[in-house]
Amino acid sequence: MSETANVETSTAEGEQSDRAAPASRLRRWRATLASVAEGQQSDQAAPASRLGRWRVRLAIFACTSWLIFVALHRLLSNRFYWWGPFDVVPPLTFALVPLALIAVAQLAPRVRWRLTAAPVLALLLGMGYSGLNFSTLWYTPPSAPPNAIKVVTWNTQYWDQDLQPGGPHTTDDFYAFLRGLNADVYMLQEYAHVDMTRTLWAQARSVNQVDRLRKEFPGYQIVIEGRNITLSRLPVVGHSWLDTSKWLPDDLKTVPSGLRDRPLFYTSQTQRTDIQVNGKVVTFYNSHLFQPPQRMLRLQNSPEGSMFQVDRLNYEMRRASYRAIQADVARNPNRIVLGGDLNTSPSMGIKSMIPDRLVDQSRALSSLYPASWPAGTRAWRLDWLFTTSDVAVSRYDLLDPHGLSDHRAQSITLWPR
Image (cartoon, rainbow, N blue to C red; front, side, top):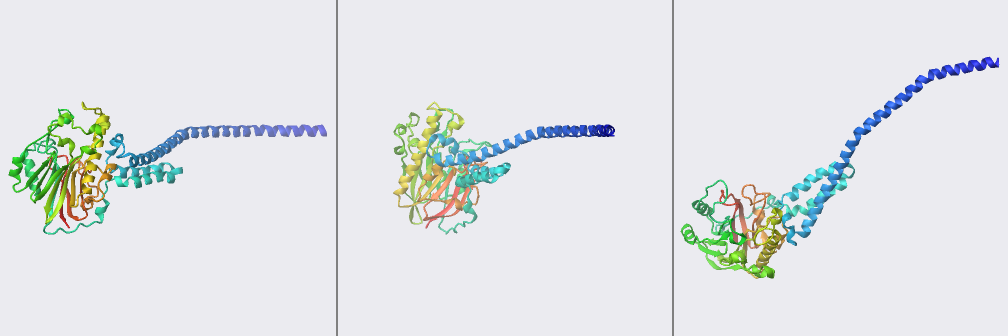
């Protein structure tokens, strides 16, 4: 009985084992297939994962790099000449780039909020460099009284030379444009001609068109100092030129040999003319500063020196020009108008050297982003108007020069209070 039972039990177990074998194999096959599928999914996910990691890294790099750049710009602009190439960044960049980077920061989901703080901080630090004229949104200029005068200040781009495309632009066209502006006071820059085939200091050449000026502007007084010229049909009670050279380092004080016959082209960048306006003396500073250091950006040397030497000269000359203005304004009791091509954009730290006594009249412009150069594309603001608070401005426009210059002309209606 026992042996028979054992045999039956063994037989039953064998039958169960035989039935279980296919099921076991099926489970193993399913496990194998699942493993293969997981491996394929893993292989597909790996590139996507790597791409995601790179996207996060690039977002972090872009956001933090721009913040570092803006911080360095605040620290180094107007302190070291070799930072000059970064000064020529279009001002609007300081607003547009951080706004774009706020969107880029969203590509890093795990750190997006912390990362967004970097471009937001960069925007706050750089907004003052952006050139955006927010004050025009709420400022209403005062109405002009009948005795207000019209002032025009303009970089003529080497007087009547035809240097812009779309010509010919003739000397008659040039004088017709000036007469058409019908200003009481003209503060004009680059009363000179240029020959770009010459060496650096020999390029700007003196011109003498006084007879033509007297013919075109009868009744105006003509004041010429170096490359700056002021025309006034109001009484001129005094004039002089501001000496930049005494503010230069010793090794740069000497007038270059190419300018010995016209030293004011080197030693003075600002002309002062005192004019009687409505019974009050107003000082008009007609200024044209050297270009910002940017030869390093163009990798352009010169026979007069390396790109580093020329850029250092421009840097020192610009600072010396502002110091000369500061010194003269500090001891000048008159009402003041300072205008011209300062070769200074809103993104340049050197703008802080404008005397505190002077008020930026950009608020009277109608544009949210006023720009004067190049005249067509208008990416930069290089031409400015500042006055003391006792000079009122009712209108301020940047006018199309109609191909006669690469700078827009500044037209201002003002009066002494």
